[in-house]
Each structure stands twice: as structure tokens, then as C-alpha cells.
Amino acid sequence: MNQPSRELTCRALITGLILGAILTPSNIYSGLKIGWSFSMSIIALLVGFAFWQNLAKLLNRPSWTLHESNINQTTASSAASIISGGLVAPIPALTLITGHQLDTLPLMGWVFSVSFLGIWVAWYLRPSLIVESQLRFPEGMATLATMQQIYSHGAEAARRLWVLSSAALLAAGAKLIDSLLWNLPRWAPSAQLERLTFNLEPSLLLLGFGGIIGLRVGLSLLLGAAIAWGLIAPWLLAEGLVRMPAGASGPQFALLIEWLLWPGVSLMVCSTLTALGLRFLRARSAGGPRRMAMRRPALLPALGLGLAAILVIILQMTLFGIHPLMAALSIPLALLLAMVAARVVGATGIPPIGAIGQLSQLGFGAIAPGQVGINLMSANTAGGAAGQCTDLLNDFKVGHAIGATPSRQVIAQCLGILVGSLVGVLAYQLLIPDPQTMLITPEWPAPAVATWKAVAEALTSGLGSISPDIRWAMLAGAMAGVALGILEGLAPASRLRWLPSSAALGLAFIIPASISLMMAFGALLAWLFSARWGSLAERFVIVTAAGLVAGESLAGIGISLWQLLH
Image (cartoon, rainbow, N blue to C red; front, side, top):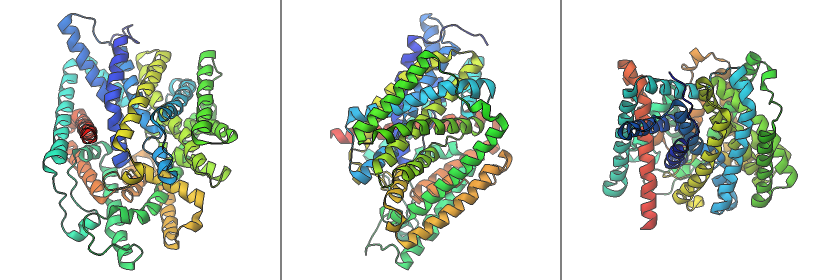
């Protein structure tokens, strides 16, 4: 494989920015639907390669180089990763609790600022985590493997792109038929099961996400749905702890979620923080504490880090009325937690962004009890910085393997988060013009919003404001979460597949059972296909799933725009 010199070209940047602008709304949509997002690196890689290689042949222009592909995917993935800046978690949670809703330009500035901070943290961690420790960074390695395959076998890119496009068109068409033409019925075995949200959700996006998350997580969602909505919810109704209106029909998600989210959130938070701490300790012992140190600042990166910190502090003060001292305290905490997240992602590939945010919430809940703005938005600083930090480190991993220039990747990442901030905020405001009435509903379950909101309320109002039965449920969820977190944190990778995913179990309490069922079905289909046709599955399952996710979510954005204009 040759090592071409063209890298930070206009066509590479523009391609990445256009693809990032197209794909960012997809992550906003899926984040509000199911609380998960998808890395857009491989999609951007395939589309950019196929377009420019074919154009180069037609017009006899220079070929699309390996390094240009890397700049393209770095730019697009950074834009799509803007979801970690808070648009599907703390920002709407603040609106639900306080009614405070930022205007468009201030919100764009805030999302950009916390992401900009994460870029410079990644710059200083790169020498220790990428060059010296040589952590694996599984997501980056998957992107690298795809890049090597398409450059070694050009026809492979065309095949994968055809599969990706076909899946996207299929999912988009199904969404259009469901929403605009037929409004497909949500079939349920009985009225009682339908009230408990056990109905058929005709969504290819959910099938696609099921194929991405794998059988372990899919079956964990199924188990969690059975416990939460199949066992606990009927018990709540039978005991009168939750009262259903007479003659109620259809899914009663909004009624039951007010109780079920508390044990679900407790399970997720405690298990994730426990596993995070154990994974970090294991990674630290393997790599040595010396390697976690950030390097001595060079002038330009130091200016970038300083500018990002000042910007975040000023925006906390002006937009949310946070005291300057509290705003300043968010910076060292964000740096520390971003470093922890980077080490965990490098070792496991699992981005613990939710856990990082909730750990920040707990910290600020102790420092400034009773202050919702500080609890949510100062914690948002850590989550946003950690999200962009880990995204860029995955890109650095690819760049290091192919001999790319890190500073040029940073430029691409900065431009990517600029476009991601603009497009992501517009997509969020288009989809959710009224968060207080639209979120944590069957249409928009927004599990990440529910989690941040629940933690903030518990830390702000105190557990005394919560009914005793919910407190006992929270305790049970917390104990189960700690136990599962210990098992996940200590178990070797080869044994993890035999353990239920604690994050998926907790998530199943916060989303309708119909969503869990469809995602579990998608995971099962992908597993069966892999068991029968292993080599084909390795090449096409993730690409097909990514197409289903992107197609339905982009169609959903278009439908929302159409309904807004008409």
C-alpha cells in the first residue's frame, strides 16, 4: 500500500463536512429514540472513496488517496459525534426541569465549546495512549481494517456501498410508508400487553441497531423488558402503586415510566460507574500511571486548550448563571474524566460517556447541592469533552497506522465539530420544538434525557422527596448494578458474552418494551446470519445495519420538516 502525500485537501475536507452534515441528524434522531448513536466513520469512508475514485477515472483526475480518506472520515465522524455535546441528554433535561430553553445561536456556541475542549485533551493524550501504550482502540481499528480492504480490493468498496445504499433506501421507504401513507398498526397480542407497551414496532432502524449491538446486548434488552414491563409493571398496577385511568387503551408508557425509570437509572449508573472504575484500574496497572500524564504544552495547542477552557467558563456564566468558581471547577474535572474515558475506550472500545456525565453530576451534587444548572451543565462539560476526545483518539489511531499528520487531523476535527454544532442544533430544534411535552413519551422515549433528569432531581431535591416504594426500588437497582458492574469489570473479555449487559438491562426499564423487542430481534437475525454465513456477515452485516439506521433516521428528519412546513 502506497503512502501518498495529498492529505488535507479541499476535496477531502468538503466531502467530510458534507457527509457530516448529512449524517449528524441521524445520530440526533436515534439518540432521542433509543439513547444510542452510531459511529459514522465507515459510512463516510465508503461513500467518499466510491465517489472520488469513480470521478477520478471518469475525468482523469488524481486518485483519492489513503490520507484523504482519513481526513474525510475524521471530519465526518467528528460532526456526527456532536451528540456527546449534550443535545440528547443534559440540555433537554435542563428544559424539562426548569423550562429554560436556549436560543439557537447560544446553543450552537455551547455545544461547540465543550466539544472543542475535548479535541485538545485528545491532542495531549495522543503520545501516551497511541504512540507509547499502543492501546487497541477497537473502533479505530475497525475503520482501519475497512480502509485497508477497500484500497487493496477496490471492488469491495463498491459492493459495500451498494449494500449500504440499498438498506438505507429500504428503511427510508418503509418509514415514509408508515408515517405518510399507511400508518401501519402497532399489533399487539392483547389489549393488556399493548397497555404494557408489548406491541410490534415496525422500525427497520431498530432492527439495524440490533444488528450493531450484537446478541449479548440484544438478549439483555429482552431480559430487561421482561422484568420491567412484563413483571414489575403488572405488579405496580395490581398493588395500586401506579393507577391506570379507567378505560385506558394503547401503550401506557408515560404513566409507568414515572416509576420504572428510577430503578432502571440506578442500575445503569451504579453498574457503569463500578465497571468503569474497575476497568480503569486494570488498564492503569497494565499501562502504568506514568503514561496517563498529559505532555508539556507546545504553544499553539496550549493556546487552543486555554481558549477552549475560557470559552466554556464564560458560556456557563452567561448562559446558565453558574458562579465563576463552579464554572472554573468544571474544567479540571472534565480533563480528568476525559482522560479516564480515553483509557477505557482505548482498552475496551466502550465509550463511557453516560457514566462520565453522571459521575460529574454526583461530584457537583456534593459541591453545589440543590443547584440544577450547575449539576447538569457543568457535568455536560465533562461528557462533551470526553465524547470528542475519544472520537479523535480513534481517528488518531487510524492516522498513526497510516502515517498521517496529527495536526491536520485536528484541523479536520475542529471544522467537523463546527458543522456538527450548526446542523445538530438545528436538527434537535426541528425534531423537538417543545421538549416539555414531546420528550419521555412513546414517540420520543429519550432514555438519556430521562437518566440525566432523574439523577439531577434526586441530587437536587433529595431522596426524601421520592416515595418510599421508589426508594426501595432504587436501592434494589443500585445493588444489582454494583454486582453486575463488578462482574463486568473483573471478567475476562472471553467471559463477558455470558454475562447480561447491565447498561442494556437498565435501558430496557426506560424505553418501551416494543423497542427492546425489535432490537433483540435484529440482534438475533444478525447472529443467525453470522452463524450460517460467517465471511459474508463480516463484510456486510454492519454495513447493512448502518444503512437501515441512516435511512430511517434521515427519512424521519425529512418527515418532521414536511409536517412542520405543512
